[in-house]
Length: 195
Image 1 (cartoon, one colour):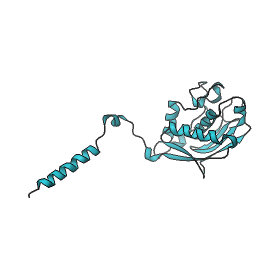
Image 2: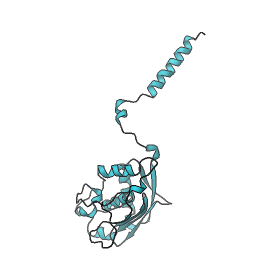
Image 3: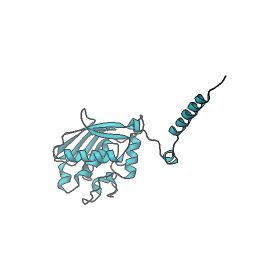
């Protein structure tokens, strides 16, 4: 059987094109594989968050810029709701990605930074427990960091933990601490998760 040179050139060009298309650069090969197609979208409702609506939207954007496996968007039906009250800020996480946040005015009245509070409380919804390290660099150190702390960005370890919680299609819901999180040492009777 005689194969024309035109046909061979076409097949060669096709194979070369496929080789270029599927070549992975060494830099890309070293990158970890991520499940970007499996990003979990969580909707939140700030319609009853009063003066904290804007700061909650900002906190959602902080998390969106910090993690890859979950994305927070305002909307309903909501996975978690945000309420404003006169108490201390707290979160009731019913399961991973679901619950209620109360943005209590008591902490802001004492001088704590509202964006740090909001980002911290969303951290509980995303499966992070309180860690009273006293370090401003640790978002989940909460009020154990000084009032002057304005860091609202999760640490690398906190980012990794959230991405791990939402990795792939099998969420780690059974491995994540849920309950009522009140980040205040004198909140008698409240469940505070601290491993």
